[in-house]
Image (cartoon, rainbow, N blue to C red; front, top):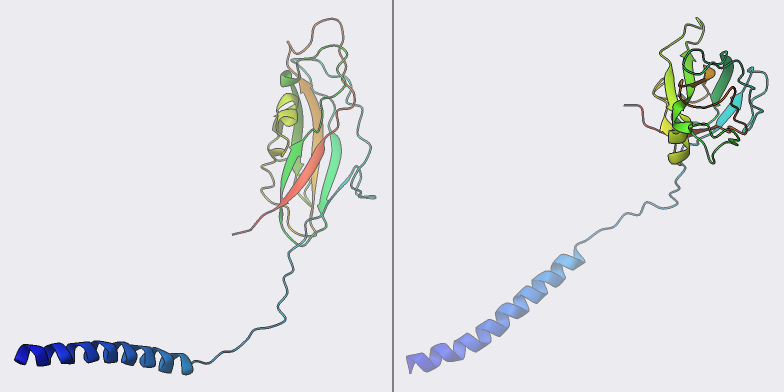
Length: 194
């Protein structure tokens, strides 16, 4: 008899407990408040890189130089000035690449031809450490090889480089060699200054 009474209470109690939980959950849902943040917009920093031979006229493309009097294994070309300017609002890491191989009628080994960039300090014009970029590596790196100095180019800043070409002694065979259409691409990639 007692057992039957417990069984009778068990069923309604279980249903009541479920009902109490549901009502409790509903009461919680009724006690909420909302605040909206509307009309948001997003604006990124901008990246802009221009190049110049003399700081008078900056452009996205300028005519290059005739790098002459290279003696393979001994003497690079004369240094020519080159300026890059960050016209964007983000600091830029600089990269150097070539979209296609140069015209190479004398079958010069492009892995033994280097583009040399020497940074110059603003104001003092003091030379920094030169960096060499093998032409073949520039061709094989579509996203470009990093230029390490400067590590970043600040917004609205410019950097002078001296640019030269050198060849290893065994880069070419014969009495002379030439390359043409050695088109270099400077790329600025937005970076974060920590």
